[in-house]
Image (cartoon, rainbow, N blue to C red):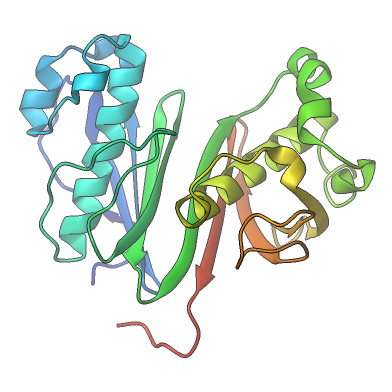
Length: 250
């Protein structure tokens, strides 16, 4: 397997996906790929350049959406090739989720000009969810907070360290990661009120999300999911990865 933080060496290009920025990380059976992309540089020829199929459903989409899709599918290809798997077209599900090849579990996210993809073999992981969010403004926080937060206690581990708008962004992103992690198993939409942040550690950059409603016969009220996060001046990245028990990684 490739070493952590290995740079993907390619020649420079002026296409919307910055191939030189590609990073590959391998850890505990997970492969994470990341790159920068620039929607303002996009044109439809970028799909041909990267040999990635433009889905019929996106042919009339705005350039920004096409660039996001292209960056994500490029990273999926890098991740699959790093795993030693062939790459083929990854369709879009009804809630815009990627439909992974048999035996693969993963998640893709993008925000502004950064994209990430994380995959594993499903014999090692039961759930994987990834989300990237640029910081919500204070004005937006006031208008959307009630749709994300179900109890003021959800803020407890974050407020001493972050302003309210950034604390809300972390929680929003964590709940997005939970949706992405569980959606395949549930098969239908559920909103932010399905889970609460019940504990967290800002030092360790972790939150615990607890379901407060049953989502399926096997995903029940009271089930807990650990979410890790990283933050910088521009954005937060959250991840939920739930291992399958009693298996060692290659």
